[in-house]
Image 1 (cartoon, rainbow, N blue to C red):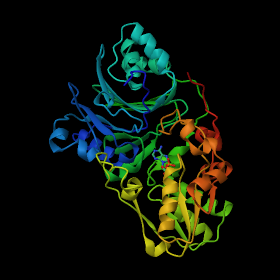
Image 2 (tube, rainbow, N blue to C red; image 1 turned 120 degrees about the horizontal axis):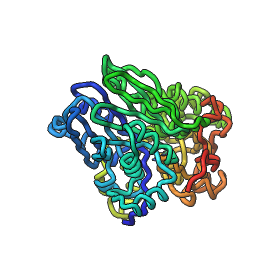
Image 3 (tube, helix red, strand yellow; image 1 turned 90 degrees about the vertical axis):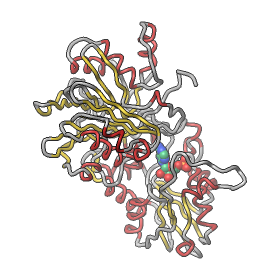
Image 4 (tube, rainbow, N blue to C red; image 1 turned 30 degrees about the vertical axis):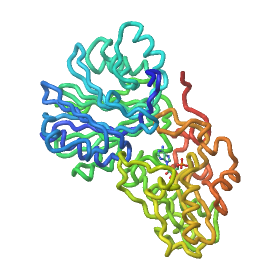
Length: 453
Ligand code: AMP
């Protein structure tokens, strides 16, 4: 594997300040953020003297046990769920990253993707820096290590040199720091539980641990959480926020409040609007679980067509699942989904999903629904066609692999074998999310908010 290989980091991050069970809470938060990354998980804690860390591949429940959590001492901790479907899940790339710099120990966890690290890495390497991983995040650590001043000055100085999407949680001996890049591409929220402050990629873990949602970290904001409380800095030049629209479409958990809106309600409304934009005569609405559920409910309520769970998803396929040989055709999708014949036989079915990426899932699902006896299968997608890859931390494939980048909607319909196919319009999506100029739509438009290397 070449060291030039670029990892895509679209992950879940969190931190807990001032709780005697900090690592245990981080573990619970990571558990609730599992949908943001299933490749591996890591926690670093401090008892304000030493740092303690544990990282492992697999789901959070597989990665940690009671004994490992017990060893993560102290009342400040940060954690990371790793998501990288494009390759290297080797241990060296697992986060949080730790280092000892002149001001002491530091640990960092990153959600996002930097877009100018190639040059920085080259310069740093030429100057003698040694990199242990292929991850962008290590570049930030090197920049911090080389900067002068206190940790916050060093951090600001380093972040001013990098471009791209980053939500960060940083651990020092006495503080927890949270950062969102100036465009605020990836989310990061602050929660509170008595005297404990929590940072989390999403709000869904707050209720789980008995915390309340305080507010979002703002785009371009650095929050420093220490014994004096929360200090806020906004050291970057102000730009118009460009928050990732795909967080609403697919990535975030439906029970999170994202940038002021319930994800569930947004998705439901997308489905409702889709039913008005692209109505269809049908007997039943069937969601592709789990990603299409909220939109399908909206489609059903908007159209008056009853909803049934005509597809059931197996939730327990771990990463160690061994794919059988070609001899069992389409086994991959069958182990993941199964059709409930009773709701499909002889029916005109509307299948609703959040998005089409390569087109493989929808093709297999349409075929499965038809094989279960459906008379007609109509595909409705609650977002516009994805035509461009994401360089800001969602793992979408290259442009060539994105079916909508080179095929018309009619060609995609033919490929999917559906009787009809419609996507939600971009205007419809913008209308639902509101504050439309504050989002990045690059995956749907090819227009990126900033230039990159
Ligand atoms: P595909 O089969 O490549 O068209 O993928 C479409 C399915 O993948 C849909 O059910 C989506 O909910 C889901 N999906 C969309 N974006 C992503 C992503 N970045 N990572 C994993 N799954 C995704």
